[in-house]
View 1: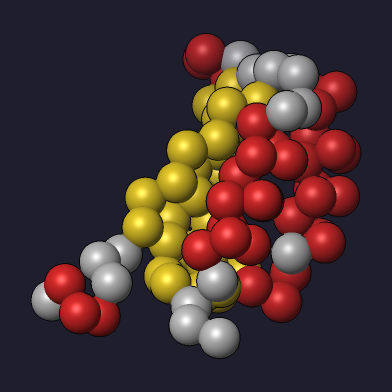
View 2 (view 1 turned 90 degrees about the horizontal axis):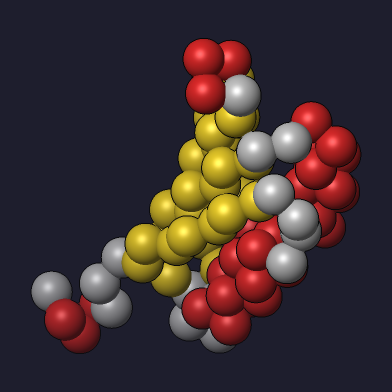
Length: 85
């Protein structure tokens, strides 16, 4: 199955959402290439960047699950498809 490389940006606006986000990310751990998390107390948010290598449908499912968690925003940027280079 063809995979895509993508960057998933997550902003968490509530400490209560952190555990739920981590549970969802754990479900998709085999697709995660790398992860960086930064607390930003000045704005009362936490920011996580995730690099993924997975089928597009799986990346979309992950982003959708995260976006359904209250106080969480998730946006994905995809690499270009190989034939688009």
